Length: 423
Image 1 (cartoon, rainbow, N blue to C red):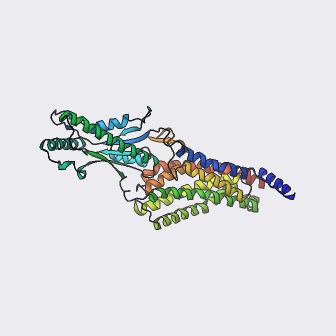
Image 2: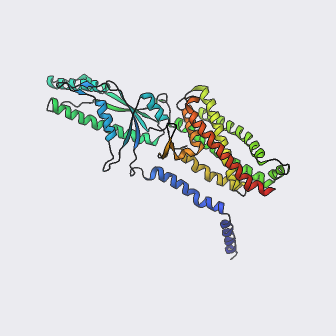
Image 3: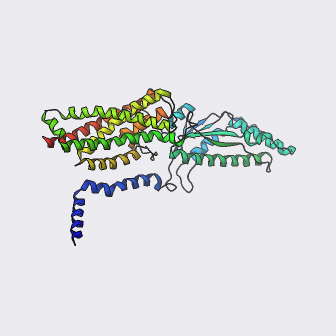
C-alpha cells in the first residue's frame, strides 16, 4: 500500500505549490474566457459596427418627372437606419467623411469598414434605367445593362479585422436589397410593368489602398512579432529568478550596488536582444513572403518600436520574477501571463471595442492601458500601411509612458520581494 503514501505525498506537494496549481487550474480558463468573448456570442449578440461613408454622389434628374434625386444620400441614410432583425439595435454607426479620413479611421481601428459611393452614382443609375425602359419599348436588349457596365460601390477595410468581415457581408446584402427596391419602384412609376432585369450597381470588396496584394499572413505578421516580443518576459523572469537562486544578485548587493543600478544595467543587454529578435522575426517573415509598405524606413522604425515593446516585456519579466520561487515556476508563470496578454492586446485578432473615453481626438479603449496595444498599432501602421514616424507619435508616446510605469513597478516589486531578502 506504499503507493497510497506516495500519492498522499505528491498531493500535498501539489497543494503547497500554489503558483503551479494556479497555473494548472486557471490558465485554461483564460483561453476559455478570451475565446468566449470573441466567438461565444457570435450571431447572438447584436454589435453596432462603425462604418465610414464617403458619399461623392452629385445627384441626377429622374426621367419623365425631372425630379432631383441623390441615391447616394438615400443609401447612406439606409445604412444609418438599418437594424438587426427582430431588434432595434443599429447595424452601423455611420461616419460621413472624406476618403483620406476614412482610410485613417480604418488604420486607427476606429472604423470597421468604409464604403465609397462614386460621384456618378445617381446619374449612371438613372441612365441605365432610361436605357432599360427604352429597350423594353423597342423590344431590344440594352447593352448598358450588361455586367461589365455595373457600377461598383467600393467596400474596404482591414482584412484581419473580424468587424470588417461582418460589415462587408451586411453591406453587400443592404446594397442588393436597395437595388431591388429601387428597380421595383422605378418600374412601377415609369412603365407600370416588369422590364428586363436590371443590374444597376453592386458592392465590390477590396483591400485598403496599397495592401491589395497582401495575404492574411501579411496582416497577421505584426501580431506574431508582438507575441514574440511579449515572450521575452518569460525568459527575463526565468533568468532573474535563476540569478537570485545562484546568489549572484546577493553578491552584487554586498558591493553596495543599488537595485536600480543592477536592474537598469540588466535592461541594456535585454533591450539589445529585443532589437535583434525583431530583426530576426522580420527576416524570417520576409523569407516567407511577407509584404510591407514604406521600404527600409519601415523596417528601421519597426525595430525601434520593437525595442520599446521589448523594454516593456523586460519590465513585465521583473514583475513575474518577483513572485516566482524558481526559474521553472517563473517560466510557467510567464507563459500564463504573456499568452492571455497577447490575446487582449489584439496580437491574433481584434477583440470587441470597449471605449472608455476620448483622448486627443482618439478613442481610448480599456486595452489601451497596456503598452503592447500601442506597440501593435504602431507596427501595423508602419509595416502594413507604410506610415512614417509622425503617424505613430501618439502610440509611441503612450507606449513609452506605460512602459516607464511598468518598469518602475517591476523594479520596486523585485527589489522589495527578492533583493531585500538577500541582504
